[in-house]
Image 1 (cartoon, rainbow over the protein chains, first blue to last red):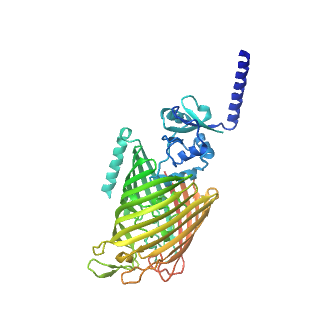
Image 2: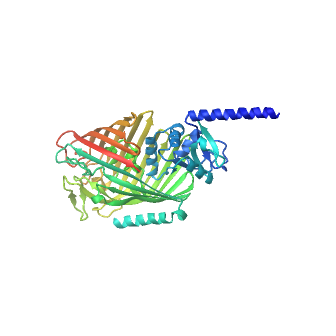
Image 3: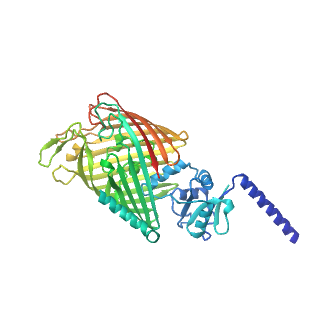
Length: 147
Length: 377
């Protein structure tokens, strides 16, 4: 029994290592994170994109959502807009100029990097953010992994 | 002007100063356009006096600053300060300032000075970065001077699948100035008729009280369709006091982007009764723009027409202007948040009218050249 468990444990560790190695080779996965108290068990890319484009200000279950962005040069931001929102920087700027200067919606607040986003989301029950999968810990809840 | 600006800045400073306690967040954003333009018709200029037969900067140089303060999750304040080269010495004015209240997620109640959603881009028509042209097609966009009003504006949002249906009724009043066509014959306050001086650009004050309208739009991921109707009572400055002349404007528009194809098209009809018809004769017009995105470049072509809309002929009726134009343009994304634009257009006044110029041009088609850079920050 004990021996079997040990084998399973080793196997799992190996898998994790492989996964980590794979993820690193693929410039690592992106994690969509929320506050640990968030009741959702998951979220789709489309739902995340709608919140980040200002089309809704609520999570799919109706609770208010406050998304935060990362600064333009951040690698996580590049990945997020390319893979999840699927829009170029120019398209995003044009999109927000229309909404912002007509008072319809304001773009998400911008934080410096993964660490800042994680800390902010951990402290805000309505928070929503994206960070590199490597920085995730128990202070936040992962709603979606984007490979 | 200075006083209004000072008040505005004081309010902003006040909001900012108490920031941490009184408000959730305060954002300041801006937009700017710098451009040069010229026409090739000697001793002539565009009807608004902004583009002349030598290179000038009045038409497109402008700067706007927007302040958005979230007071609480339901209430925010929006204000926009705006300065244009066309105004003397870049006088700064408050373009809009209103409080938004959201009693429920899908309803916004805006009270204050609002921009009116008459055309596709009218509520952001000074934010050049947000559209392909240097200036939106003039055959349509110069034809509604009722751009803003003090009053109430409601925005209902109804999700329809992945799209949103927006219903926007508004009600208010406004007093402003309009560029007066110099061939207009108007009733002066003494009861006689006055012809404005030809070849000059004149301004006439007017009041719209009330102005009310309804805008319906369907906003989907890659296209927007809208229709609007506006009705107002207008009074010209020189006019004998009256109940106001009836003003009606109906508009239709569509814009979309599919793969790399960019489309904009709009149509309007305007009918104005009484003495105000001298300044605003019944007109209709349309344009269609087709563009194709090639990476950072967006070449585009626009065809426009301004036409008579069965204007009556009477002593004090205005002369409807007729013009067709074609414009070739190129937009280039110059890094983040900046766009560089080039345009060449040719306009042909028709039916013996001066079109959108001050004088009947010395040639059948007038070319317009323009270059501009737009930024947002």
